[in-house]
Length: 124
Image (cartoon, rainbow, N blue to C red):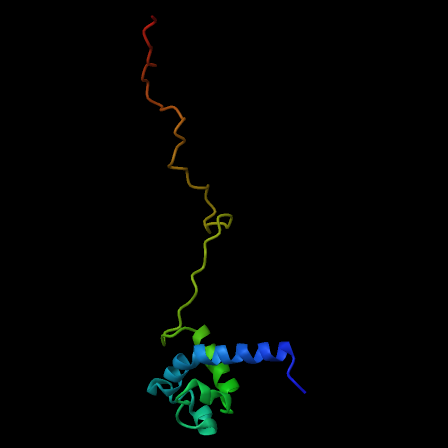
């Protein structure tokens, strides 16, 4: 039985993913800073990541190691957990119960409060 077009497409997509992620995953897996975090995976699938991306096809640890790698990349590459910045809502209460602050910016068409006489143009 020959593989269907969809199966061939899935296999090609898996190969492309393996090829694209191989170097980054290998660097992450073999990095000494991650030895404690990956000790269970390294005991199960070996101490070193496969050297070539073609070796990933036969390697049993691909799915589980990739899952851990994706979780690691979602949390960031640095050891410090960066908190996402919260956006300040324009409609949120500022917290103080006083009157809202006065606007410092004025409309460019607003007239000054000074007593400048209006400019009169000479009549022709």
